[in-house]
Amino acid sequence: MLSTEYTPGTPRWIDLGSPDVTATDAFYTGLFGWDKEDAGPEAGGYGFYRSGGKRIGGVGPLMDPSASPAWTIYFGTDDAEAAVRAVEQAGGKVRVPASDVMGFGRMAQFTDPQGGEFAVWQPQLTKGFDIAGVPVSLSWTELHTADAEGARGFYTSVFGWSLTDNDMGEFTYTVTSMGSEESSFGGLMGHFPGETVTMWLPYFEVADCDATVAKVAELGGAVLMGPASLDGVGRMASVRDPHGSMFSVITSAPPAG
Image (cartoon, rainbow, N blue to C red; front, side, top):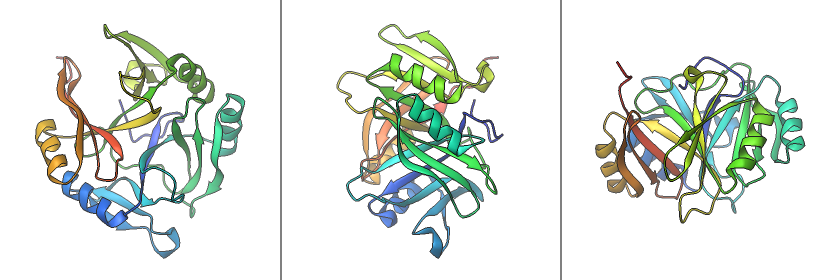
């Protein structure tokens, strides 16, 4: 499962690009009870979301006015430049080249061959988020793609992930890990009927999925799917915020035994 321990290839950070950061702050602080910390005047409007003083992720204005608001997942790397080369060799595109982030670390942003956007984080002063897998923090990551087989080849080449296929009846769900079930952190799957965009979807753990979904609607967001329960996994729903950024919420099932 997701951990705050630094391991290359696993999720280390998330952030959100928004066309209206003030309105976005109101939505997420209202939904999850997060606090907002400004990163300072040199950060260009970027800031951090916190829960109980612990960093969850970041938010900032869209750098490209034509871009769609979306959450970005950053995977750990020991060498951002090497990650750039690996992405290019595997057929991906570099959207933002490797660069320093005020001494916190180095980052680069990419698009995979199927169109999914993601990033890498090379830690320096900051390893990444302070908490994971507990209520109102990131607990899972999931890629929805038009070409699941192509995605398997691309991401295993770039990050060295181990993949475990699970037959879900109507589709195959592939769990991603760094070699063991205990190190799993996400999944890959083909598109649901009607889906057209390849995207990484963050899951946030919540204490009560149904209550959280009701609050999404109250705060101006929309419910896309669920809530629904999956045996052994938990109760979950896919939603979007008022600007269209998609994410999921989950109340995880207690561990077996």
